[in-house]
Length: 117
Length: 107
Image (cartoon, rainbow over the protein chains, first blue to last red):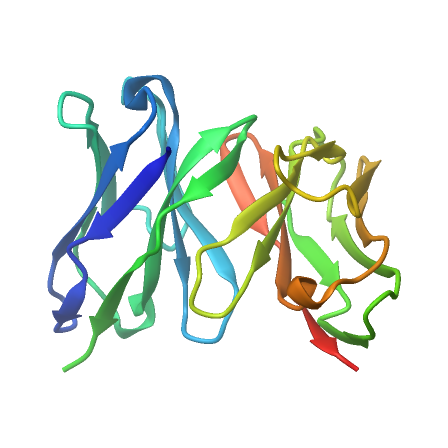
């Protein structure tokens, strides 16, 4: 069974940093692209970043470029999102998702990031 | 970047109704288009990929159609468990864009 479990969310002050993790199991993690997607409270889904299976290719939404870094450790079956220079508007639930057929298929349950002073 | 315009933003329907949701892309591209269902407090669930392919395990009352710039999700006979929010997402040039969502409510 495919499982994705996010962790690392919490309360951080504006300008601070946070690293999200996504532990994957039930599939050959290193062979799949992965995504981070965010959802503001009561709002829609917003794609944040993707990474290829071997980590050689990444891309970011404009809102994340220069501040967030996606990475993965295939030996640990874990996806990461390093979030720096956090802003109040980064407050959201962050989901990790596996990619299949060029689109997210399985999703984790999300981790809440709150940026507030 | 491609913009996805999803309509309607909400709709009220009864059990047994046929429901149609549309996503329009600001420019034509590949058919890397998916549809997702999300219930409150839960993760999204993929229903359709490649614009028309039904995800394994998803009931056949869900179907996708379209190509180029206009895509449609149809629920042929709405069931009580289908009341949720639906999103489209399209991939183009290693960027993914979601529609704004359609909330399907009970009439």
